[in-house]
Length: 405
Image (cartoon, rainbow, N blue to C red):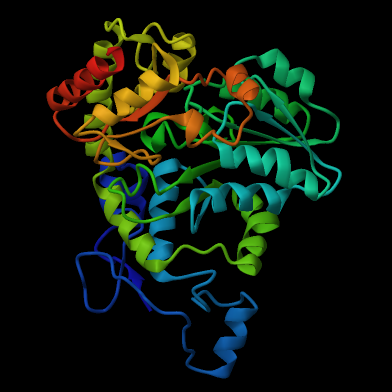
């Protein structure tokens, strides 16, 4: 069985910076002493004796049983994420949506109520607004920016509040400590999708969240290769709710994907810092262009919630949302003129990617719903990559020229 690296004092990880944790955290080595994390492509495991097999299945002896619910490579990825987030427990899933769905449905029961911020990814909205009610779980959507709206929506049977912050694609921000206090006073748990901020720019658990969720597909991989998700929580939540749900329903991450995520984590700070710096310069560029009617970036002083962002986040992130004057026709002319930035609905990649939310990620919403959330026909979401910001700005200028034609 793989063993933790005996040359590293496990107590050291408590004092390591995030950059060090992301290279060494959770390391397991086999007897071969490999430098890179080992990739265990196995479905099952063998036992020395029948007694050992019995003990493992009864949780009386540590060890791996079946890769649907535990695997050495996946365990390394989970431990590294746990250390980075400062959580008691972590479980990886096949996708980000598997993480969201598993966390919520493992906990909520028929008769419960969930309150969620209305500005959220389309698939998350489906889970809250359409899937949960099928199982007798009522839901209410609120303006996540309005703390009083959260207060009014919480009922005696409210068991969970859920929100993304910053939200996709409007970059609306929720006051995590304030909403967490309201939820905890009502006996509810707080579930936070922290994808846009990444574990480096915002620490929801330290701000009062109970469960933190990631699509590892985004910044954690960071190079457009694999799907994955992460749930970070307390040992109690894992034991009482999540563990059995994952074990029995099987939304498991592939060991290969977990291995790719491990390698992605090693460069996460370098990538995020560079992307944030470029995004800030691009947001400033766009804000001074007459073809752009609105720019939203969490690192700008003109963001409507700049004060809250300053309290909760340590950086502006790498997503810039902006509105092209002229609606959908102008936005499409802009997109079709780009030659470096690629049209794609992913984000957090080393390559800069751009999408038109009204016709892609949020196309399922009715026009009036999109208007209520501030998703106009001219809105574009830009995920800034690792290219030269001068090259990106030149490409954006070509798009703006086409939009105005």
